[in-house]
Length: 303
Image (cartoon, rainbow, N blue to C red; front, side, top):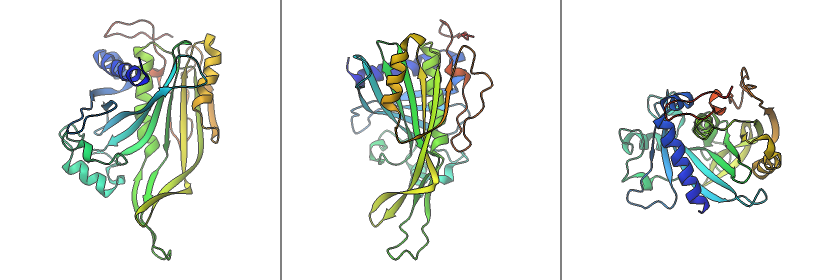
C-alpha cells in the first residue's frame, strides 16, 4: 500500500467510524463529513468536507503530500493536509475574508455551505486556505504525531504604491490559527477515540509571522511583528516507543521556531490544563485521550 492509499483509508475510517458512534462525534464536536467529489475535473488526491458542531461554516481537508517519512523507521509515513474554511455569512469572521472569497460564498456555494460540484475546480486553491495539518505514522512503533501550522492572523494588504505614499488597505484578515485549531483538535480527537490512542506530549512553537502584500501583479510575503506563525505538535506514542517519539518530533518540528510550551501527559494528567498561549490559543481536549475498546456507539475513558 502506498502512502496516498494509506492516508485515504485511515482518514475515511476516522470520519465514518466517528460519525457512526454518537458519543465520539459529540466528544470531538463532529457534526458531519463527506468526501469531496471531483466534478468536472477528476481529483488526483482525496479531500473531505467536515462540519463541526457550533459552527455555521465548513472545513475542507485535502491530502496534498503523502510520502514516506525518512529517518524515522522502515514503515513511517506522513500525510500533509491543506486546511480550508468555507465561511458562512452567519459567522462572526465572515467579513474578515477577502471580497473575492465572500462573493464566492454567495454565488458558488450550495446549501451545505461548500462549493458546488461544477464550480469547485474553478476556485483557486489559495482562496479559503487557513492552515495545514500533518499526520505522521510510525507503523512499526505504533506511534503517531499530528501537527498543525498557521499564522495567528492571515493578513493580505493592497499594493501601497511605488512611491509608498498610498496607505495600503487590508484585503483579508482571517484568524488562521483559530480556524485551523478547531479542525486540528477534532481530528486529533477522532484519532484518539476511534483508534484508542492517548496523547502523550504537546509541543507548541512560534516564530515571526508575515503579511502578504501586493506588489504590482505579484503577492509577496513581508515579515511583520504584528503576526506570528505557530505550530502545534501532538504526540501519541507508548512508553516503549521513546526512540520513535524523538524521531517523529525531530522530523516534523521546525528547527527555527521557539518552543512556547512542552507538556507531557500521564494517565489522567490532562485534567485542568489551561490554554497555552493567548496569541496561539489551544486548549487541551479531553477527546485527545482515547478510551478502552468500545462498541460502535460507546466509548469508555481510559482514566
